[in-house]
Image (cartoon, rainbow, N blue to C red; front, side, top):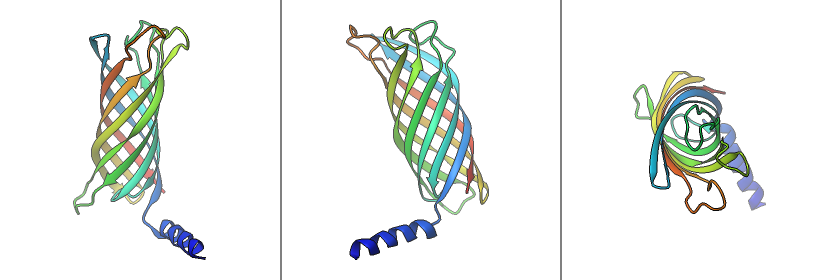
Length: 182
């Protein structure tokens, strides 16, 4: 009986809380420095993001996002292709009684980049650790604009079985997007 009561209390807090599901989309400008075999290469790309979140823009939220990076630069090979990623991030927003709601977020991501430099698979997988800070600018109860800076520490898989070094990179992202809250 205690378990049922506890479960009902938890469910009621979800139903009567201020948390909402939200969908978002936006544009990102990526500046990435890739380190491999003692060499550093800096590239800049445009990216798009779709995200689904659950939370309150004045408290806590969890976000799931899909990233598409229009990689038109040579990173590992002259024919490097697009980059795709999936991220899960926890977000803490603050309500200071001003027009904007600042936030901090942290999470993890994974993805792959199409490249013929990986002779076995034709793509390189990667994992990332994500940190970010930004502002929600409410434009109404169900709509806000998001401005953010994000840092990602990215670790790519080894290019081939003979390689002893894994490429890694630091990624600095400027993000502008919109969120629709339900």
